[in-house]
Image 1 (cartoon, rainbow over the protein chains, first blue to last red):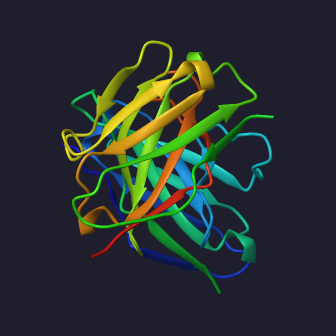
Image 2 (cartoon, helix red, strand yellow):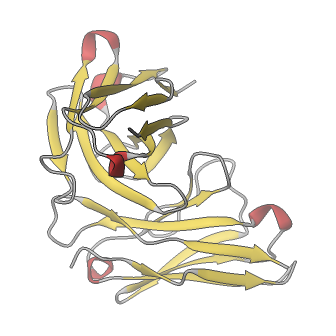
Length: 108
Length: 120
């Protein structure tokens, strides 16, 4: 399968913890990568591999995986975390990549 | 400092051809894969394909195979995305991105995007 499925929208109260999930057969084989995209901006890499953050990404962002589901967790959400989040992985056919449909995170 | 600088916005008519560019700097251009990602208006990211500028090896998503052509000119550290005959449905923002190393590694740097508008 070449699909990664994400919930279209998630909300979280300021300072609380939120998880954004991504499901797909390829996630049984490959780690998910997570990108944050704010309106009018290019995406930014936030989590990759088992649970790796690029320099400059706050440690309130973390990643995990179980079976066919990958999760991005934001612990202590801040207003600036309001954005679209996309998961990405290599397709289970092994020869191309795929993105999830994206999750719009609203911080209340 | 790693930078990917994309060419400017384009307005084209259906049936016209177009080539947009992505110039890399601050790293060894021939050693890292470059990906192209489409984002249609108000929609999500779509993985189009990747190219290795070192030898122009390319991998396309089935959705984009035959619809676009990726190329690279390593002498000027520039990757290209080419359409031979544009359609209105090609209207989108197109991003290039540099992987961390391998073909399917994370995209650690992104270009600013090129907006392509196709309208009669």
